[in-house]
Amino acid sequence: MNISFDGFDRKVITFNADDDIEIGTPVKISDRGTVEAADEGEDFIGMVVSCKNGLVGVCVRGVVEFDCTDETILPGYNYVASNGGTEICTGENVMKLVLDVDTDNSKVTVLL
Image 1 (cartoon, helix red, strand yellow):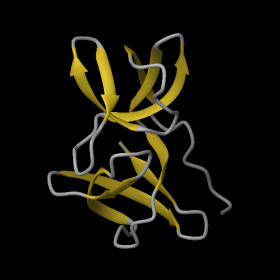
Image 2 (image 1 turned 90 degrees about the vertical axis):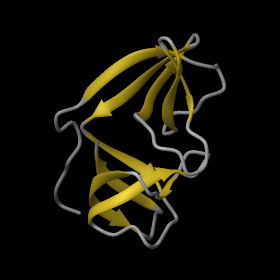
Image 3 (image 1 turned 30 degrees about the horizontal axis):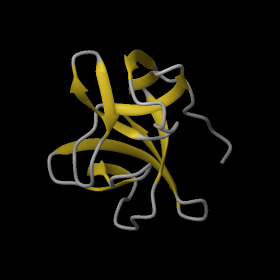
């Protein structure tokens, strides 16, 4: 691809989190100032973009690239949710703009 969406309107917030949370994980707010991985089928507030010493940076706005093996997600507006791991899948409640689908690498580029 000869274009880039990286960095567009990116907003990152720091939260407390478990040390075992991975970069790329869709997360939900679990307590005051704390996030955890969103469960399967749950909506998410953003994606973990950094982890250190029990703190995580969560991108809550902007363009991010999620892992995704759900072939029903196509470019355009889609209802999406967490798959309970580091991927997103088809959801029911929250619509996001999918800018690109890379089926060869199982990635989707999403505007949060």
